[in-house]
Length: 218
Image (cartoon, rainbow, N blue to C red; front, side):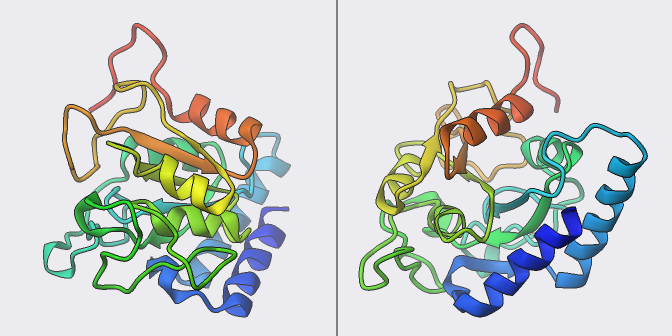
């Protein structure tokens, strides 16, 4: 059940004590409320391909109810809606855990350029995690999140994935809408996917991508 998975994720968050991963962690009660709703919908016969999966979202991607900071507290704003990629994962039954730490404004490949603190490697805390989607990658590598969203303009998704031993999937430009993403370079930005296995990453990408020939929603 989704509720069991969400409780396990929060128990792990409390046990590993890695605040460097997060900019804003959603209250546990809010995530559990989402999980109860998902369990109710599944019990009623609704098909949700990601029912109960947990996911984290890089701090430069809009999540309604969480501030979008891009790693800069003075830049923060409250988005009125989810970015399309976030909304599509939610619609598939996944539950947002929180907004993840990152190299400020997605300019860096190290995971240390953040006023929220450096994000340490998942398995070697004395080493860097890679960036700029550092918190998202480490959340997946530690098993806290099943999936995570990052951005990849010039390696910001693939580098921390490689550094932490997980899958970092950069889609073709334009395949996933970048609405609700703070631009680093608007013509090159991509929403990227983190997962522990390639099939999981491929499933998430299939759910957030715009079908060929169809204009991305705005």
